[in-house]
Image (cartoon, rainbow, N blue to C red):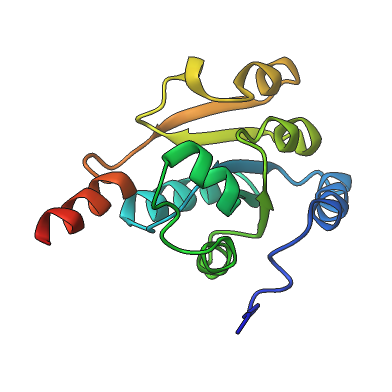
Length: 163
């Protein structure tokens, strides 16, 4: 059964762009982050909270199932893209969620034109997709929101070790 408790927060790219346009028309600041969010952990929550302290609107791009499989390999994702989007949308710090199918979020970044591009502190700025673009339009790239030793891959590995 398909659930969509947060249909006003989980948007297609076109609907998201309409919302972003409205927000920008009243000078609201936009923060964007992305990820697989295959297993949600406190590092994710911390990053989303910190993003909400910088911007009026927090947008999260969630990798599609196909995208996660291509990035993470066999056996991933653990949860479907719809479940992952629902979980992210349920977080009070998140305003909008969209699912993207590409390997990287560059098309979303270029379309949204966020004021803040945010990734966890385990990312170097040179590794962040869209960093150069965001800086070129006057935005900021931030990657210092990080709780050590928190990652979905580590959690999944720990679970596998139990068996």
